[in-house]
Image 1 (cartoon, rainbow, N blue to C red):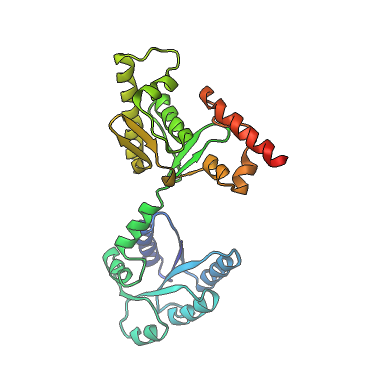
Image 2 (tube, helix red, strand yellow; image 1 turned 60 degrees about the horizontal axis):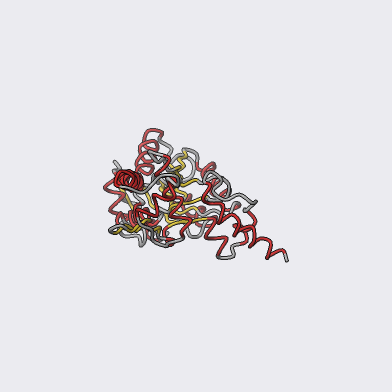
Length: 279
């Protein structure tokens, strides 16, 4: 989401931008003292097929007023939501005629902006937090080496075996496995006994701890002696391949979880699938 703030007073602009960046940490906030530069930026967004969602405008500015600036923003980006941030209360009627979505008197605070946002459908604090939760998608890359990203950041597992366990669950595509099955994959040359079971349970706990720390533990289903990935909670190139996604199919170059020997069976399956498509 793109937001813009315009105020010809440097300190007031810096203060407003700081509040907006704190409220919308995952979005892009740009501040301008110059109205023409702000309009140019809005045009550039439009040319790139990007949306300017919000414009926070001072009203009494040198050169072009915030009221006129709002009119021009509306011409460039008809869907932009205008909120006036001003030290004067005598422009409320003009703001209403422009269908402004908010009228905030200076000194502006986060709380005052939150009050106005509560009246805009889809942008209340509760709705924004819900959207943030929905964005917590786990991205899994299996073609080549195995990698996991949570909230667009690489997921750092405390131990390599914990990461390998997560890879094994992804490979199982939602089929549940028990501790003995996990042990046979992670330590294929060891006999399953009490010590190995304890070691496996430790790895399971470490994997769950890593997922919880990233806020994405819901992608794994855990019951007594049962563990499975929830395929609907991850975005995975392997799953997309199986669903017939052209981009995923084209991205496969013969390597699947190359860092794990047990993945060779799935690699053979993918190679055969590719061969059948060519025939």
